[in-house]
Image (cartoon, rainbow, N blue to C red; front, side, top):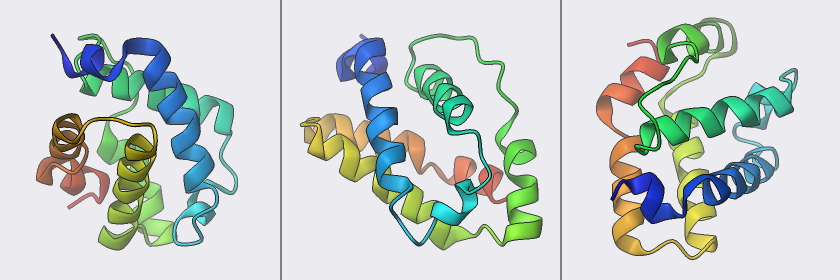
Length: 123
């Protein structure tokens, strides 16, 4: 069984992403990165990414992390503290949804993997 299935599949990922962005948009540490973002598209993109990252599909046609975050790093100063704040919001969202600790650990291992962080921060 994939992590995607263990988390509850498409309905759970959709709800988690919506709640996650509700939280992110209230977080003054990072909400400015989303000020001019089409949040409908962003939520759909994130749902597709999580579905892929958590094993729900082997297909993902979103832009690669380096490409999609490059301008945020270069022009808006996206850094490690911001990455950590996003990861923190994801984990709090999932915990608030009642996701079990063992599954939270699996999500954290994927979401905060060193390679992902380097890719997002263009390092």
